[in-house]
Image (cartoon, rainbow, N blue to C red; front, side, top):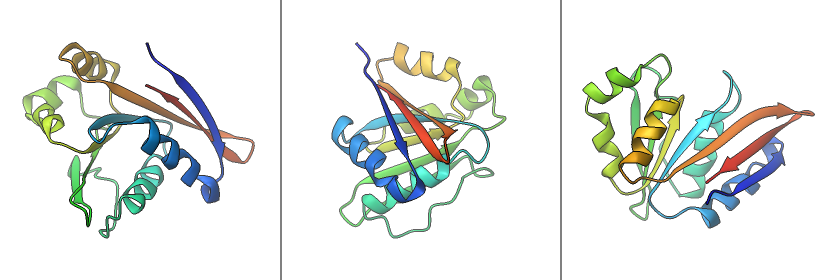
Length: 143
């Protein structure tokens, strides 16, 4: 049974979203980030990386498709940008096997087809939808 949580937060309050995710999600999670261009998907990933004590600069993996980060405590954070990448192309690249690696997998622009596939093979997928709302952002979290 899925749960739905909405959090309204400014950029200065985004730690509330990260805190909720830290409490609600296990140490191995697949998180689809949904929202228009410039909605704040990479920003959220950057704040998550900071909370996990990752020293590396987190940037959108638009051209590399995936960035991998390791925290000072050995936690892994994976960041994917699947913008304009069709499901078949993603599957043929073998990237789906990356989801077996322990850590949080932040997926920008993950398709419904990929979500259905992942759930079909036993993964839980959390959706974080981000949208502008009264000068802030509304984060709708479904897991």
